Image 1 (cartoon, rainbow, N blue to C red):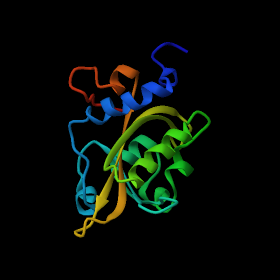
Image 2: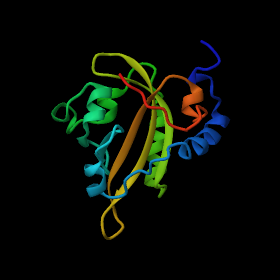
Image 3: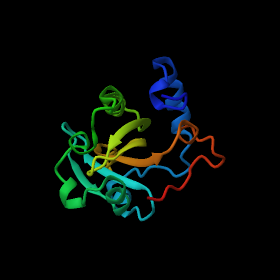
Image 4: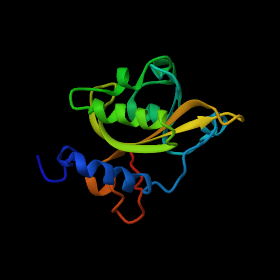
Length: 166
């Protein structure tokens, strides 16, 4: 394992890393279900229910391309069911949800996930809340971006976002 592996980040660094991470994506997360469904760009977007077990409601074409599951295959399942594998840090994923449930609107982490065909990838994940007109959280939205190394995860590649093509 080289020094650029995500697993080399200490627990103390994780909090600092999340602060840096939240500032690296120039595109804001959608804030309403309508906005999230309207996203028509190259970001891999998943919308889940806001209640346990956080079942998938919708994914976009970019998410299908990255993860390998179609909208029909993903709907009704959890992200853990589809993307977690032997090297996924379940604690980090749980911590993201916990922060959202405690009124943080936009959180992030880097996770190891697996595509439908079993390919392991590093996933820079941002998660936010979607609210209705009464400011009540109705869904969560996640934006996934495959990364190649920690410099990309930290946004040190110049622009803070690097387009990744499969």
